[in-house]
Image 1 (tube, helix red, strand yellow):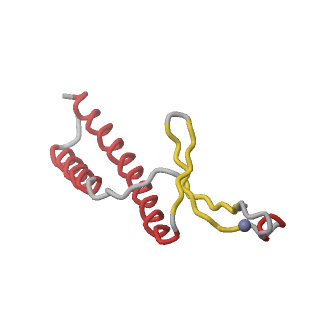
Image 2 (cartoon, protein in one colour):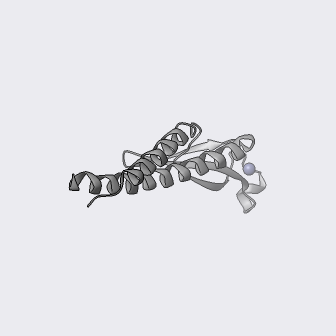
Image 3 (spheres, protein in one colour):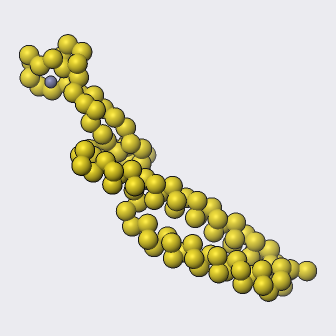
Length: 111
Ligand SMILES: [Zn+2]
């Protein structure tokens, strides 16, 4: 009593399209964009009396339990946001492929 052959074919076709979309997400970035306001080294600068420089954008990246901050130039802010969106799409695709593969397991179990 498994899925019909048609259902299996449909799921496999959907999975194939998602796998091809994955290959297009080449600019993905996994991290969080944060804004920093900084103090410079010039002693007389107004940043020392409250008016800090900024915002400066950084991408916070976690790697092996450590957090790193990578400076994002203003000219790359749009690219960075697009990269984060690509990662969000990646996660959605992984979730959908997981659902598909679990459904296909069910089919195989009955065989
Ligand atoms: Zn300053």
